[in-house]
Length: 282
Length: 196
Image 1: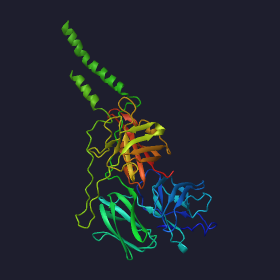
Image 2: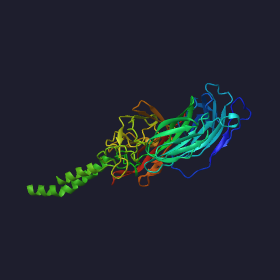
Image 3: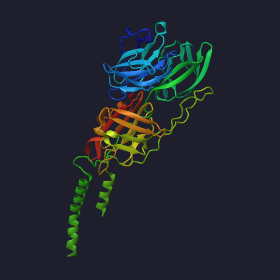
Image 4: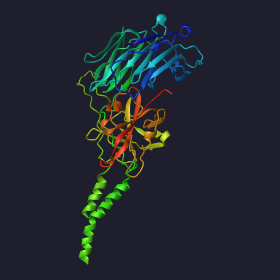
C-alpha cells in the first residue's frame, strides 16, 4: 500500500541521490477535494535532524523554498496541486539552494488524493527515509471522527495509545509506523501514551466528520501527542443549488420590460371598463 | 384597483432570490457520547471564528460584513437576504480551517449586477483573499470554475470533504427562467490554499 523512499543525509550521499518516483496504489474512489487537485504536506519526524528548508517545484523546473525552518515534529500545511510530477527536497535551514539536498524525492500526484510525506530517520544507519502515506478523504460514519497515529518518537519506542472504554488507537507501534484510521465517537478523548516506562496523557478533540493524525513525538524523555487535521467534511452539506440571482442582468428579460408588459396588459384589460365608464358618463 | 393589487403581488413574489426568513443557525451538535466518568467528554464550544472580508482582486470584489447563511427548509443553502450581501455557510468550516468553506452571493438583483456578477470570469490561478475575525488572512488560489444545472448540482464534489483549507464560491449563472424568476445554473468556483 505504501511506497517507501530511501533518503540519505547529505554528507553520505551526493552522487547517490536518485529521484525515485512515489506512486501509491490508488485506493477506492474518493470524493473530490475540488475538481482535479491533489494535496500534499510534509512532516519532519527525525528527532536528531536540525530544522530544514523545504524546496518544491513541478518536475523539471527550478525548485523554490516553500517552507522555512521546519523542525522536528513540524508538519507543513497542505498545499493543493494540479496532478502531475513534482520534486521535493530538504536542505538544512538557511543553507544555499546549491547545497546538496538531505532528501530529494519525485512525487507523482494524482487528483483528488491527499498525501503526507513523512520523513523519519529509520533508514540504514539511521539515514533519512521518506514515507509517502495517503490521507483519508472519505467522510467517517455519522457522529464519528477518524483518527490514526503516526509514531515519530525514536528514543522512546514502541508506543501504545489508549483511551477510556477500551479504546485503543495503537499497541506497540514502532518508530516510523503510521496506523490505519479508526472511527471514534465525537468528543474530547483523554488518551494515555505509553512507551516502556514512560507514560504521559493528552486530551485529543475529535469532531464528527473530521479526520485527524495524532503525531507522537519525544521531547526531553517525555512523549507528546500533537493532533493535526487530515481534513473535514461539511457537518450538514446543503442539498441542491443556491438561488442567488434576481435576473436583473439576464439577457432579454430586464425587469422593466416584464413590468412594462404587465402594465400594458393591465391597461388593455381595464380599457373596456374605462370605455364603459366614459359611455355612462356621457 | 384589484388588478393593480394583483400586479403588485406578482412583482413581489418574483425572484430567483425570493426573500426567505433567515433560519437560525443550528446549535452545535451535542457530543453523541455516552455519559462516562472517564470520557470521552463533550467538546468545548467552537471558537466562533468567522470570515469578515472577502477580496477577489481579479474581478474587483471587496466585500465586508459577511452574513451567516443556514439551510432552507428543503436543505438547500440559503441565499443572502439582501442582493448586496455576501454570505458564508456558518455551519461549515470558517475559510482557512480544514474542509470546504462555502461563500455565496447573488449574481444580480432585479435591476443590476450584485457582488458575484463577474464570478464566472475567474480563472485558475486567480487569488481570493479572506480576512477572518481572528485576524488571520487566508490566501486561496482558484483551481477551477464550473457551471452546473441546478437540477444536477454535484453536492458531493462541491461540499465533499477536503484535506486542507478549501473554498467554494457560489452564485447563479446560465440562462434565466423568467417564469420561475430563477437562473437555471449555478456557477461554482473551487479554490484552495497553496504553499506559494
